[in-house]
Length: 606
DNA sequence: AAAAAAC
Image (cartoon, rainbow, N blue to C red; front, side, top):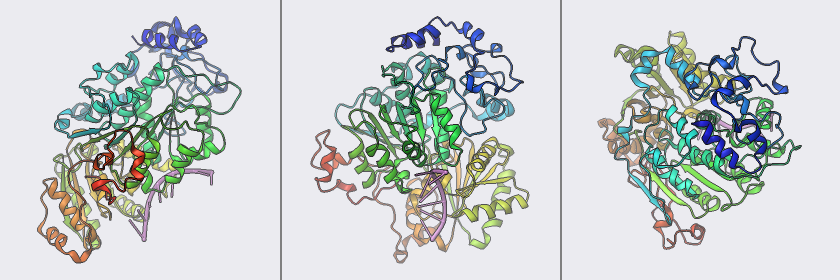
């Protein structure tokens, strides 16, 4: 059971006598009696209507609803040690911190919120929807995914979660997440990480990437014996850092990581811009093992000395290519190389990227030590699971055409409320005006872009996910990484100029092995994309309209076409050169190029 | 060119 295993771990952690005193004797039932403890700084914040936690509790409480869903381990919380870098194991108090303001009335609860509770509420609100589709991941779609590894002594992949010793608590959460079998990236990446190796992985979100880096981190923190920080300092010392490019992605990773770490005592905190910093600081001061952050806010926290990286043992960079695209390299280098983070070799680093251009290769050389390269073919995106259509539509006709599409979708009987449609536009202004127009015409739409406040952005996303506004107009802020279940249709109202962006956008549908539809409005403004789009569609066995093929053939448009071939997110450049000696990635700078990828042309596809 | 990201 949870308690015995977790307690065993806890008791094995050095200097845990204080914890053992609190929790070592804990039986699941005893948690009930003690869970009323509220630390002083949070007293008077509990909603008056909150039912006693005693009404639930126990390891099976993940099905309970918020308000009655009960954390079981309030008593195990080592209350009052908020000046510790972390709280030790025994169930840290936690709050859903996906957004300030919290969810419902329980933001002030100082026990570990049941991160699975919301899933259940959704399920109850939409039973039919849930029954039909929400059965987890379609694993058949993962058959035949090509995988490539290279590097010295690659640990063998696993076929089941049971083969990996992740511990009872984590295993229970895996079951709660309804994960049956590891996805390809998990099958390879988890053993690699558990073996303590650095990892450079080319894989997509939606492939189970978040779990792939979270499981080893959580497991490592639970079993590791990490020194405690001295008290009295207002600085916190996370053991793991997960960086991601956008705020929403950080929120999403935080939510997933909270599920994975539920009742493990490992505390996850998220920090990102646009939200009041004070609440994030309070969360941090209550202890943090895993910090999920966007670069800007983290630099801010580091400069204020609120966070120290000197205890970092795990570093994960998600969507690294995106972060570079967004100009985060200076911040990332500052965080990783110029603050107090331990150097490569003394920490474990995982770098995830959809593509593997030169800049990422350089980053891999600088941040990783004797790493293993892993490339996992795409799941879904742009392969058979997404039907791609391109239609020639002049700018002036786009709106009426969009309306036709939405009408058609309704007529086709795709269940109204949950046939989510994601519409990508080029500009923030364009997003606002299209949203307004849709609403004026009776289509419930909302929008997400960088000119909206963070609160508005998160509200929009929630309202879209829940189906209240089944149309979301978005700029590229939503193009990558966001995992929104049940997006049935991605419409490229304005096509991007870069084929990689197109691939990422349509990847918002066909998630987790489900099918999806992607429609693009193409016109003369998109000529630079003609060739690459035609080639991409052809490779994905999509029907390419003749007019597009003709445009693609016109060299005069200077379109670049697709670079390279194959389906991987890149190749281990160490293999393409003369210095394939396993751990000599630094030679790359001397070695005069990265083989076939020396040109630095990545593609989300190659 | 636009988008994203700290205050």
